[in-house]
Length: 297
Image (cartoon, rainbow, N blue to C red; front, side, top):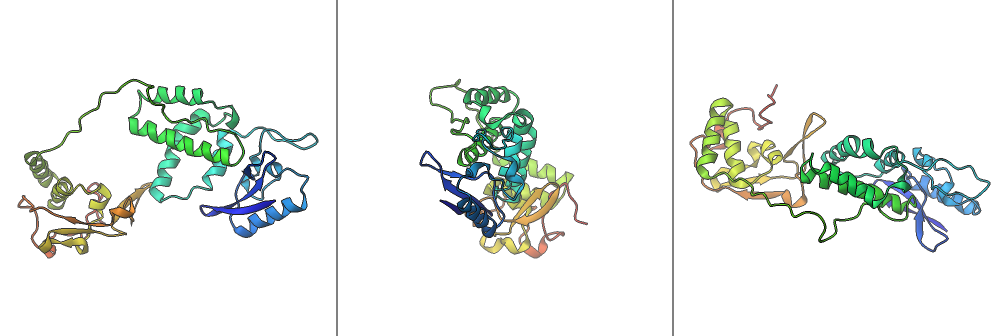
C-alpha cells in the first residue's frame, strides 16, 4: 500500500517495506496529483519494487543500490546525485538557502560529491571534520556538520542508506578548548568609535554604531530602520515583520528578521551623543538607513 505525504513545498510517495517499516520512493513530486498518480501506479504494478520505479522528475536517477535480478539497475547514487534531489525539498528563507548553497558548493560537494552515499562511514566524517577545524571557525565547522547531517538524515528517510553516518559529538571525546572571552566595548570606547565614524562617514552611520551598542540589535535590523520605526519621544524602536535588510547574492531587500521573536519593540536608553537627533524630521536623508558601503541612487 502506498500513500502520499507533503514535505515542504513538494510531495513524496511512501509505502510499507518488506521489513515492516515505512519507506519512501526516491525523489519528490511538485504536486499532490503527480504524487498520487505515482502511488496509484505502484498499486497497479505490485510486482515492481517501489524503490526502482522511475519518478517523473529529475529525481529518477536516485535508486537504491540493490535490485532484484532481471531488472535494470543504475550505479549507486553519489552525494552529488542525492544533493540535487534533496535540494528540491529544501524550504527555507532566502538567506538560509544562500548559506546552505554556499556550504554545499564550497565544502561538502568538493569532498564528497563523487562518493556513493552508502560508502560514507562515521569515521570518514569525523576525520574530515577534524581537518577543517584548524582552517575554519568553530561555528563554520558546526554549520557544515549540521547541513551534512540533514542531507544524510533525509537519505535514510528515502531508503538510500540505513543509518546516518554523521554522528553527534560524544561526551568525553575531543580536546578541551579554552573558552575565549568576547571583547566588550565600554561607553567611552563606543563613543570614540562613533566619533571616528562621524568624521569619516556620516552622522547617520555614527548613530547606527551607538544604537547597536546600546540595544544589541542585529545589523540587518539596524540597516533596515525607517523613520516610521522611531518613537523618540518614548525612547523606543519598533522592529516590524518587514523591517530587516537582507543581502542575498548581492541583492538588497527588506524582509522578516531572523526569528518570530525578533519582531519586537526595543527600549532606548538616553542617547549620550550630540549626534543623536531629537525629532524624526531632523534626520538627514536618505529616509532609509542603508548599508554604509552602498549609496542611495
